[in-house]
Image (cartoon, rainbow, N blue to C red; front, side):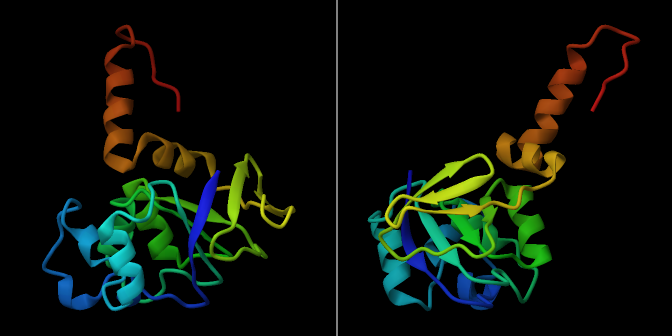
Length: 173
């Protein structure tokens, strides 16, 4: 079960998520402090530890539009947030997958701050309202990257699997 801690609208740009003036900071251990830096209430709640890992941000359409800055995904990953939106910008979604940020595409999702969401395979149940919403699944290969924690852990996992195969046995995908 995940609590909705922030409800956002359409077209939340990467500059809102991670303002450009902090672009010199790229380390994933340092980027979280700048998440929603210009949204003072959200930033303060995140930095104070008031938001529990596994909490949800819910947005409407085109979350992560704008520039291709990877920090927009890494700063949210640093708080172990789940981002649920009607849809995501293409580049933000790919950055999220590469970094292992859990993003969920749920067209038509209805949720308010404070609602409790349960993720059940191909659907989300809003336990507060009792309504169910369909999840648009990621392709299996992309989901495997997210499940591994990102592209680097995924590659390490695949390399380790290849090392355990007997000589001459081809690795299957």
